[in-house]
Image 1 (spheres, helix red, strand yellow):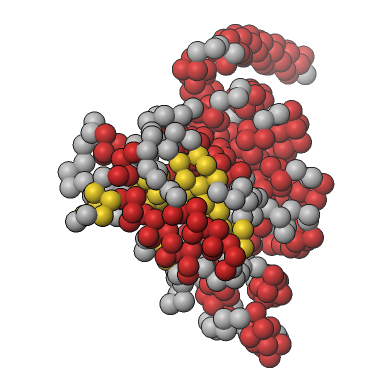
Image 2 (tube, one colour; image 1 turned 30 degrees about the vertical axis):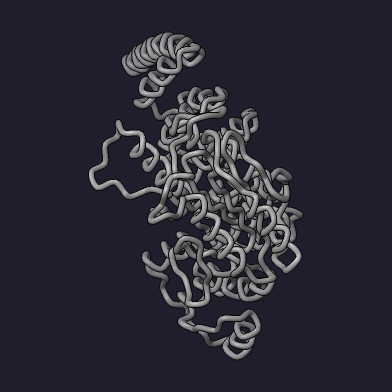
Length: 449
């Protein structure tokens, strides 16, 4: 017995020394880590991310949260996958949500932290997220809460998501409504099918197209109008079977890549949205001949006029022309009708080309037009040359931040020949890289004219 007690005592002493050693090493690591993360040099701060990668403890997760207290987008991007790698621990996930996230001030950083929880496949975390979603009053929080519930994909979240239709943001904030529906598109249940048929009548543009595509894919029926879908549901409520939505169909629904024969176009891109902002370059280079005796400016004006003439009464639109700065024509979305077309025609007739190319100012003003904007068409023939942001990467970063909670589709049209052999050092090719990247990161299409 005495020998056993001696062995136990020795084991406890050894364990104590190991823990003490680990504690000392951790304290040293933590001190060095905090010095790096608080360093003004961004690259030194970034190196701390790699230092933390081998650790998978709650203490390490608490340090990882600190990256989101720095107001730097690049840091958020790198730290986001780090926060997701603790996903084997339910305890860590709950701590991130209940203790870590509330102390983050920047809405964008909060969104990254909330979205990281999509990797934690625990029902307790989904339930906690649902409670946060119910209580949240800020759209910058509501949107990532809905996105994360969609990634976790517990069917118990469906009723909570459906109830967000009663939110004050539902009718006035396109990004909110689009997130709600795209989250529900991930579920294949009769509850969701019934909900979509119920609300189809109150939606239009891109979202109405997405709902119709979802209903057709999951039921196999093709009904078109809201009234016909309601009639179909009444006749098949208790007997319809759900079909599996293929990966291709789901990508088409979320990517807005499908179209029908009735759609109108602008530079061969379907105008799917009903709340549209046209942004047109009027810099000096638009006086360049586009072919024969027609200038790029004249051709752009003709294309814009043709597109606006096609818009039916259920469309609303704004025009922004830009050179050294962006110039909104109406400072709001206006309804498409005869009187507005006369006003549009008068302004279009007086439009001339001169000055530099302030792409960022024009795009940022497009975002200011209305919270209901669905689509921006951005036409330009030159690389950004003036303004607050000129470098391609800077403008792309700023537009991504502006669009994080807005979810606006941005299509781009390049008024220049498509380069045969791209050279990243050439000015024209840099412009095309920018235009293509702008469309790609905002779910849009890019066309050469």
